[in-house]
Image 1 (spheres, one colour):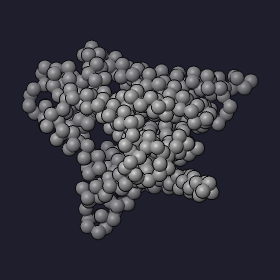
Image 2: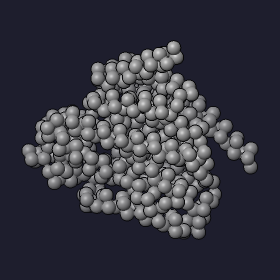
Image 3: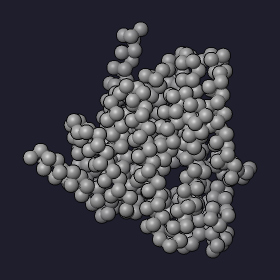
Image 4: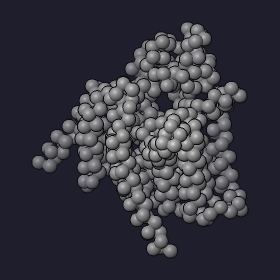
Length: 451
């Protein structure tokens, strides 16, 4: 009887993933969030019940395969991916011009097939800004563009297949790391089965999962003292999504004889040189195909926008923004965004230089990245992928809660002007901060008791 009920539950789960990926639009927030809530409830049930890893793997694999064969429905970024891929195919550097600039130059006939279609679909925000997708991602877009000449759907399936393999690689190395930490390997499924990870990575083509595949492999080899392999993989991770770069200082400090604080002599050792030189060399080699002075200027401008122009689903920053409106009567993001960036950077450095061992490395990275997001001006749901993964190697569950609550941010797309709901925003962060502060206080009490 239990097997029958489980079978019915799993078929229901697969049916919802199929429904949500085929027929639910981004604007249908109530329906989307309702279905997502059911999926999240099933996910919690599966993780809290003593099912075997083989069953969890099978369920997860079917979930991912369902999401491979559909067009992204929550994001139109893939049109920009293909745009960049078409430019590479035509021998153009995608970092040099915005789509709007390319369109105005009337130089698209040989570069981007159906240019007006792709320009309209990617949206004005993407069309008016320089690309900031790093080289590894660009090469995947390049390959996908050949498929897109015949079929948009085939190009999407190709990119999703890459991300599906990435999810499997992340699962594999997560389990390996958990083994080194002497933690239950089942913990890896908190990431692999998480509906946010499924929907935002394979479902909607966000490449954080590829970045994390390289990252987990890198950390695994670093913990096993294979520094050249670790450095190479870390470089590939950075060359997929730059956000991984924030963890470089954590890993380097871990290699600095595991000492507390900052002492220069601890950082002059062969292990650090091997790791750092290798990852920097890989990053430089990846960018060498694109780099010139204009590209660097455009890239810097594009990256700078994330803290000085863009804003979405923020927490602390929105408090600063409100104060700015009260005192000065306008949005001071050009100033407050830089303050948030400084606070994020200081938070990362603070946690990076704590006492580090295998036991604590992931906990400090978890706290550092959590504060990075807390101080960010923009927190899209897929940004939490990294935090959810880091939580796998700790006892913290606040990232799991946030991975559910963050989907409330999609309510903004139920309105034509993408207006955020202040009440739902407050609800999201009150619950998250409540659990996060509790877990943090318990953690620091344990550290104090051990001293």
